[in-house]
Image 1 (cartoon, helix red, strand yellow):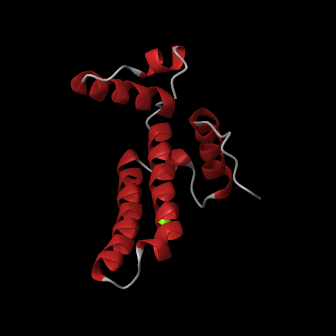
Image 2 (image 1 turned 90 degrees about the horizontal axis):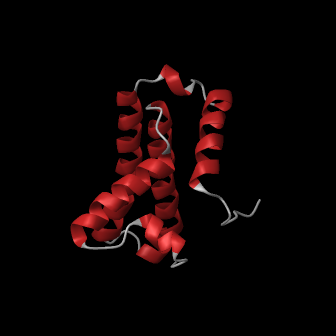
Length: 119
Ligand SMILES: [Mg+2]
């Protein structure tokens, strides 16, 4: 099935947790947050291993672009599961942290940009 760009973090978070609870060998709350954090690190390691091979000259970025995108998606998927495991809303926490950094660097907060329909 072709991926759609209509997916929102809110929908993704719900389905991601549901998939974990129904189709993984463990449920979301079977793993403590520490294990989810280590899972993120594991996927980040897979990403870095690909980058290492590109830097080393084994492959070009173009050759491994899709594989890199998939590892980034793995990291994001586990980050979302950790958010769920911590009873947090991924969208809320992304917006909250984005605004903290935006304030620090003098950039408009997310609600301002959404209200003014600036993409
Ligand atoms: Mg992976």
